[in-house]
Length: 440
Ligand code: 5AD
Ligand code: SF4
Image 1: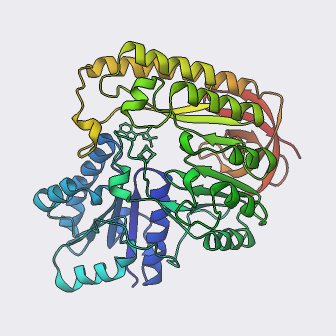
Image 2 (image 1 turned 180 degrees about the horizontal axis):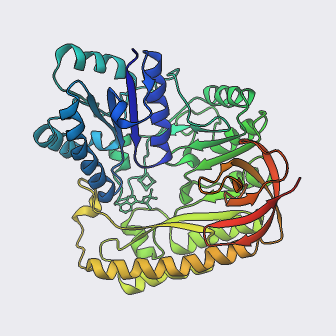
């Protein structure tokens, strides 16, 4: 009987994409996917360390697996992803979680077959984490979760060292995948019926800086738009690297979805400086306005951190002011979480957690009103959607995403299928979703 694997993924799309590669590697050596965690011979946790919350949830999860391991001593439990790159986490696993058999990091996924063999042969735990990134390993197999849209990682790592962020420490320096490899991947996907690709990188706007030869992100997008793929998305953009050339490509190329995720993190220029974000409030506002004027139907979304060390009420008001001036379509909001080894973790942070929570609630309330208003403006319009499937609760309600990345729940007309592009008339708006009717 074939061995079965079960992967649990935490964190961002980059991890989701890595898990697809891990699944591809495992299937290439004869494993098959398990329907439930209990049925698995190998359980892998692909982890995220961007905030403490994510880490605590993962440790909870690892703790829960102990019982399964007791029932099934041959079960292999593995931990990989960003947490595996943290020395303090590996130490804690070594000391307190003896039921974890395997730990590997973000830079050595490709070693999984040999590491698994080592676990089986030696019947002892194997911990193999590379401190620094090597060459990009191309040609790894991949088993994608979906048939109609796909993640395509275009670069790994980050060079920005925002002072709160652990990503540069666990994902290494920026490395761009070769344009030929990306183009071939997208051509193959399109030939296999995939309609939409989302290009992934911690900072896609600095794509190509390490390649030379005149390559940059705008040029990559221009080349990708010439393929048969119907829609192109990308994330994440850092404001400091967003060029006029990129704005022009978005404006000129209808295949590029009308959505830009542009984290601003904090509205106060003083806090932005402490965060090492390399722009001021005014520069961000100017950039957002330039994009909104040039691409009038663009939906802007953002990430915001509340309660960075030393943030005052006045600083926080700058965040609220920026949110109100830009009028984002949506925002991911977080309370600052100190990460071991980052410069911000050593900064004085006198603000009580309660105050931070109040600020967060206020921010969410204001943003939700704006999100609802933005969605209400779309009522009555026609929107192209990529159909994702029917609702779990009600099979008669289908859903899809617009170019602006808005989720629409709609009543179908005639035959519909997952992966079709259709047009809906928007009939209603909520804070996070739209309602509509598919045109026949
Ligand atoms: N605390 C809170 N939020 C963080 N982010 C990154 N690091 C931290 C941290 N230490 C947020 C940023 C980033 C998003 C992916 O996570 O907003 O854009
Ligand atoms: Fe972290 Fe800043 Fe890099 Fe984003 S750009 S991954 S927030 S260091």
